Length: 266
Image (cartoon, rainbow, N blue to C red; front, side, top):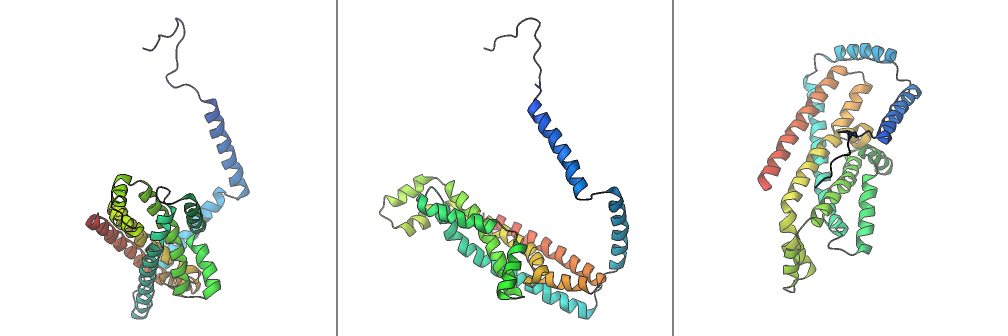
């Protein structure tokens, strides 16, 4: 039972947190200071609105001519190929990496290198990785595929490891008690508990790679991003709008397909 407050003393419903107030005030001061260093002024914003209006005016109407649609088809097809291939190999490599990173199944000397590898893959944005691979293997779809494989490994392997660490070890121990080998324990004791989540992770990664394939193409990784960058360089803004419409449609279709996959296999 809570003792009543002494007479004459009123307790605040929401006590003042002076440390939190000081933190918010310091954050506000820093935001103003950083904005002054970056030359974030209202004049530049107004001028940018005017430039943006003229830019959008040059984008309409979109160009759906036959020769431009042929270029668009090639770029979209290549982006789909890049996303599907990168997702396949990314998941294929993430399965053992995520298993090695699971601390409830593997010893420390195995999990630490695996988690370090995952952290390394997650350290850089796919565009930065794509630039490195463009320098290594040259312009084209191969650089984009390799960059998205690295990105997929960093994301999917981490989710795989976390899903495995959340399983019930009773089923694993039951399979081990039969004298099953390590691979049989994984197949019969681990995979049935995480297969539905793995399917959802894979569907999400495919959707993510569809989006990222447009970005890596801008830096030379092939796909529709390369077509978009070329159109910008030629000031072909009506074709730029056509490409943007195609990218939005592609992402929306990928979102629908990934949702269907998650509902079907979960």
